Length: 405
Ligand SMILES: Cc1ncc(COP(=O)(O)O)c(C=O)c1O
Image (tube, rainbow, N blue to C red; front, side, top):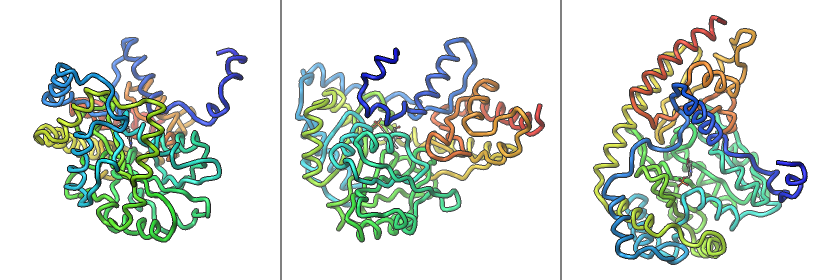
């Protein structure tokens, strides 16, 4: 781009960065296209194809002529299904006018940022965070206030750390449980602390539950909404079909929000994208109302991979990894590996990711992209064979790094 073109871009473009996760995936794809044997642990989507009954529902809808514009916020039958499923899972009822279906949960969050935030507002985002939260908040003109969490606290934010950054300008907290990138899930006690803070302050709680159905072992996902239905007028739930039903490409997500917020987002969406893709809405309807077996099978596969990857990472010299409760990410701590680096070896998680991609063909996303230097994000939305081979390569790489060869 020439300098004169750049100077003609809107100033807001200087506020945001391209997605780091997309950047890694792009570099890995380039190397693969050039013939390198690349193992990708950087993806943020299930490797399964969408279950057949869902795809068939979209095809049927198209043959039936459901190919036109719909209500901006989505067809009533999908919003009904979203309300039914949410009531069953969260024990709190919503009406269809409290739902807005958008072009994925990312779009839902974008709508919320533009409908709720503005210059002068502060929005709290616990780190490690999903890359788009601070960027969208900044784009809306507000200030993301990053609050660090620790591995020792299970990457959960505490009431005390929220209170430490609360000001009269605090507008909202954006929470993600289970989390991308850590896989950490908030348990009931941790959520109750946060809810006490919400109750004591005039703020929104935006909770991203896109991974809420992907939890493992004895961990049970709890929605803050279930624990504090009396705060329903201040809790906004973000959800969608992308991760649970292997439907990332269909682009359907939604919010459950107070009517006034839903109406504002409807108006915003009506001046940007209009309704999300009509056949995709019918696919999402089939996903929500259809058989549960395909989801159970995917979940079981993710559960096996989680065990395999996390135990393998913990066996590596210089690496430790807490067992994530949900999503499909492990978040290994590589600080020991970096601090013992010999001259010329990678000293940061960003350098380590570049080195690992070049030397071993394994693609990870550096923790720095999520506001957590010293960590890597390793997605296990890939086959067990890929995980086993990746661990073999990592083991050899860690030994080399420790030995300085
Ligand atoms: C935490 C989180 N929220 C939202 C999204 C967006 O999902 P969608 O595909 O529905 O836009 C993602 C996707 O990676 C995510 O990880």
